[in-house]
Every structure is written in C-alpha cells, then in structure tokens.
Image 1 (cartoon, rainbow, N blue to C red):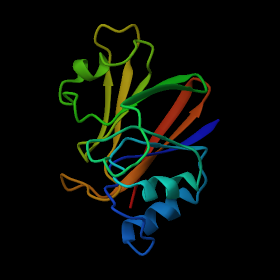
Image 2 (image 1 turned 45 degrees about the vertical axis):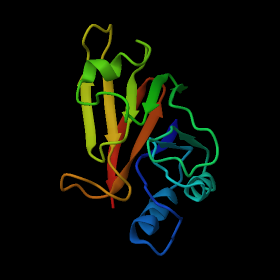
Image 3 (image 1 turned 135 degrees about the horizontal axis):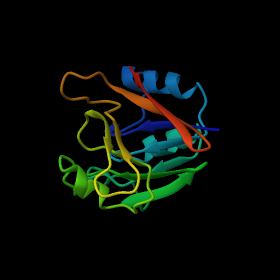
Image 4 (image 1 turned 90 degrees about the horizontal axis):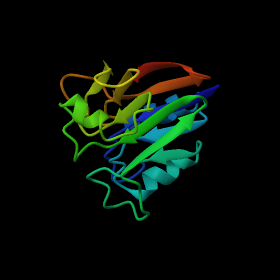
Length: 169
C-alpha cells in the first residue's frame, strides 16, 4: 500500500511556517506519506526542498516555476502498485476539453492529475478507451478559486484499488 499526498499550485515565494496555509500543510504532511505528487507551480526551490524533507516528491513544471532552479519534467507517468498515474500542470492543455487532456497520455493510464485551475476536480471519462480514466485536481494549497478552501488531497493505492479524498485546510 502507498499513501500519496497530492497537491498543486502552492505559489509561495518562500517557505514560511508562520503562514497559516504553510502551517496547515505541515500538519497534514506530518500524518506520514510515502510520496508527494505536486502538480506544478511550486514557484521557488525552497518550497520544493522543504517538501522533500518529508518524503520523495514527484513534481511537474508549472507555468510559474521559473524560480525553481532544477529542471522539472513537463509531465510524468508512473506505476504506483498496479495503478498507472499521470500528472501534468495543464497550462498548455485545454483542461475543459477532457478528450484532449486524456489523449496526451498512454491509453493504459488509470488516473490523470493536473493543477493550474486552482479548482478541485474529479471526473470519470471513458471515451474511446478500453477502460475509464479518472481526472483529478486537488485544488490549490494557497490560493483557491471558485469559493473553495485551500487544501490538498490524499491518494491511497493498494494493488489495483485506490481511494482519493480531499483534505481541506
């Protein structure tokens, strides 16, 4: 079993434990995770380094990640247990057009995580695929939109089974 913290769009120019959203994120991460998956817009290297102090981080490049000195991938596809998970920030993908988003990834992907919109999303899509794909967006850690609260999510994978829940701050 793997327990993954899923987040996106931190948009912090520094890591400030006195900031309410940072303190809430720290508290949530202290629950213990095997990995953090960050959907981009980390914004600064210090934030990424602090997240890596908790556990390994899988991160993709967002449109505001110019302050992160290391090279970040545009997208990733990995297998967690027996579940294929893809992630992209989404600034260059028509996120409102689900088939176009799904077509960016191999047909064996079970879950697609994205950020960019600062809005939570959970959508099942089948289209022309042999099996459905679930599209997830955890919202924003620091600057939610649409009346949502800041927060992150938790993805627990056990073999082929998985569960996903939002953790609001």
